[in-house]
Length: 225
Image (tube, rainbow, N blue to C red; front, side, top):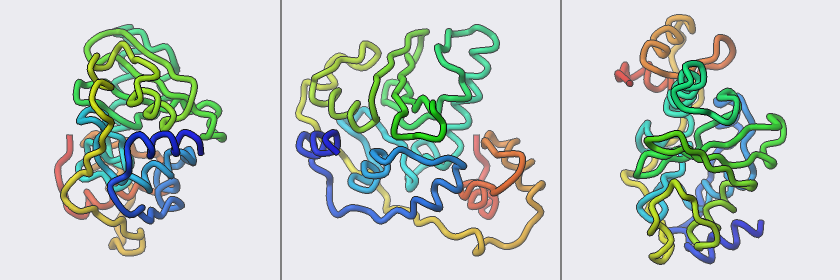
């Protein structure tokens, strides 16, 4: 992809590409993901661009940057509330917005998941951290990062000096967690897990597979939210 070539030229990846099991990730999320994002996550791993943009990753080292963790669901719940109460104008149906990154200033980046079945056509939306503003980019997440870090576009909601320094990527630490198959988890009533997870802010579907992050948290009984 031209956008990936532009990004890796501008900001070289930190090391060897990862080998992410995307079929499992997409099954857990219940949605296909854009091809450019899968290449981005494989090439760079979890981490932060220019000490500012944290792209959510299936191997995120904390729940706050984990694509399969509770953050996308929590953010969507807040958007639903804002949309219903008119707190801030949300220019898109909250159900079509999937949080895929965040910034050090508190903005969120979203995929506009329309059309739902064609993720390579998803665009990017950014909301203002402490205000009503939104910014829309008609392209992929990788193209957006290359354009912003390369100074070809300016997002009014972002820090004004974001592209002034040379583009850089800092890998997250500690070492990555590897996902485990559902068969490794001990049998348990799924309704109990769903009730436990919803009480802690996880976005859990009413039926079907329970996301891996929820299963892992249930095994640890780690309180979230």
